[in-house]
Length: 207
Image (cartoon, rainbow, N blue to C red; front, side, top):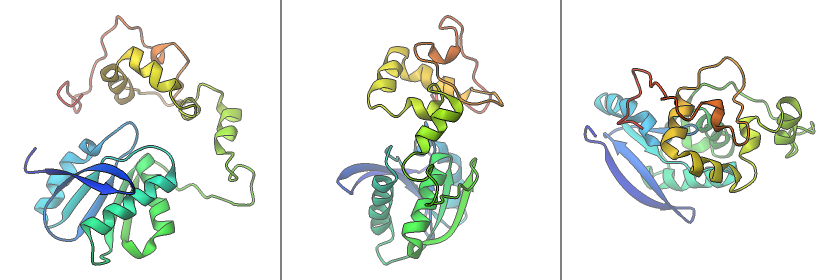
C-alpha cells in the first residue's frame, strides 16, 4: 500500500508485525481497540512524505507491562542508538503511550494522544490498586464492554459465533453518546438480518 513496508520483528518473546515507511526522525504510532496498524495508513504515508520515518506495530492485548516491554523491544530495533522518538497514541494505544512515557521517558521526545483523556492514577485509592475493573463493573454493570473482556475466551467465543467481519463493522459504526454495552448473546443489539451501513470513510475493502 503506497510503498508501506511490512516485516516481522522478534520482541519480548513474540513475533510482532510492523508497518513502516520513510526516512528521518521516528514517529511511533500506537493503535486503539479493535484496530491494527491499518488505522494509521494515511498518516504513515503523509508523514513519510514530510521526512519522517513512520512506524506502526500491531499491538497485542493485556497487560500494560507486556505491551510496554514489547514497545521497548521494538524501539531498540528501530532506533538502536538510544534515539528519542515521537509517539502518537489513539484509544488504548494512548494508554500504552502514557505508560511508555512513565517507564521509559528517555526514549520519548514528544507525545500526542487522541480520543481519551489523561487518567490520573492515585496509588492511595482502592480503584488504583488493581481494582479498576471492579469499579467499572460497579458503576456500569457486567455488560460494559471493558468488563466483558476480562474472562479469557468468553468474548472470543461470542465473536467467533457472530463473525469477525460483523464485529469490525459493528464497532466502527457504533454511534451513540452513551456507554458501549455488549449484552451477552445479543449481538451488540443489532438484528442479524439487517445489513450494517458503512460510513463513507470505511469501505468493505477496509473491513
